[in-house]
Image (cartoon, rainbow over the protein chains, first blue to last red):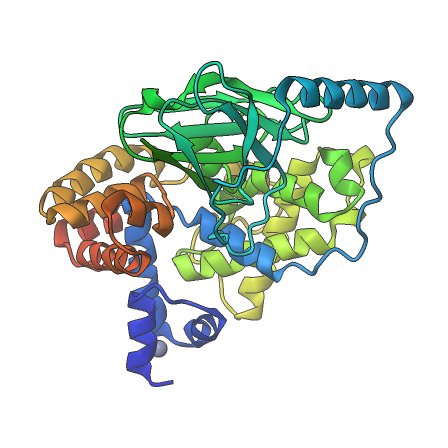
Length: 229
Length: 184
Ligand SMILES: [Zn+2]
């Protein structure tokens, strides 16, 4: 690869392990890289997301998969009751309207699933609308009422739903076994026109906002509620 | 968290990484000045921590000092391997390590306000789409997919705008001067 090409790739932000190998030995390219990295930091990008992605790609895959946790009698009954109660109350079923699309967070497998349950309009039956971030997109009507849940219920999850008019933060306290509610029920119309961006991350200890969680290295998983009239 | 880490496994490692990534970054900055070398060292430190995960013994003390010692040892090894003296004022013994590593960096608080003002001035010189891209990509740390949706462009264009803004900023004399000052 020619030297000009390395410089071009650095400027294009296209820095893979080949470019990094060159940077280790080339003072001039490294100085250029450093200037751009320092500039990015000044602009607000501390490189934490890239650092995490590169590190976890380099880790050897877990040889031992953890055995499933042994559930005690009490917990098992509680989980069963909760599952039955949830099934009765919410009657989740597959929704043919949900649009699924491939992931856009390569390598970042979410350790949780954010279930979106809701009614298409007040008075309608509750159904399972989406399973984020596995499905990156789901459509909902503008009159829908939604409630988020997180699975496993022990996850302390921070969620931010962002629409044109408002951003709604929500969190789960991680106290349930199977499903924990995340925030309160809300109506989609309150976000104003257009889609709602739903981003979530597992809360590092002591952290209560999504922005702080990301700063602390947590991976943010984002999906979209496509709002239809 | 410390005991979970000691039992091994990727999840426990990820949890510790999430909690202490900013600490390791801060410590490494005391050993290396350049961003590239800092990134390489951070990666080395965490890969070493992953290899040593099961050797950590929580009965001998909390995780943070263990991680700090591991970090400073690895950074010293990296400097030795490059036959280099540390570019900063690294203490010669380990005794004052903790104090030195956890002291606030020279650039932290004082310059960040001035830098923010300078970034705002720079942003005001940009065309509207680039200024929006700066806000979304750098300040709000949104993904290119999100930026693309927000601005009604495709992801390629979002990536292009990001790099364009970054290059322009790296050529902005006042901004670069202030960044230099912040590190001295
Ligand atoms: Zn070069």
